[in-house]
Length: 140
Image 1 (cartoon, rainbow, N blue to C red):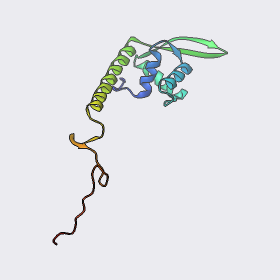
Image 2: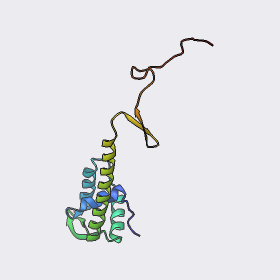
Image 3: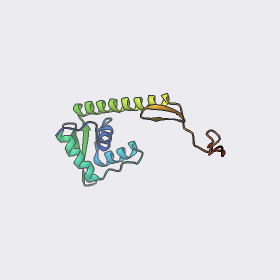
Image 4: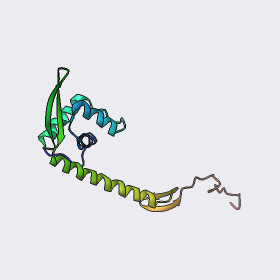
């Protein structure tokens, strides 16, 4: 099963967490939370399911294991294929951000568009910028 493109955010952040160094599960969970400013809190079952999938896809591999306080810690690292996928996804996201940023800067604040056609400044009827005109009673 191939990794879908674009990557889902949890997958992107797991690969990002492993880009710098090998880590054990709790370290990955903590790093993903920090990378997402707390928006994404991975549960252990979710993380290990994702790590199994990423290992099967050749993007992540087991680095080593150690026993700490009687508990086994399994460390994972990014493979070269994982680094390539992360690099490609980072570039895709960078291009998207750049395109959105250019569009936001190109459109003057307070203008609106309908179907891609500029309609000028947004005005609200009944305000000083756009008074409501009422009939004055002329001929019927």
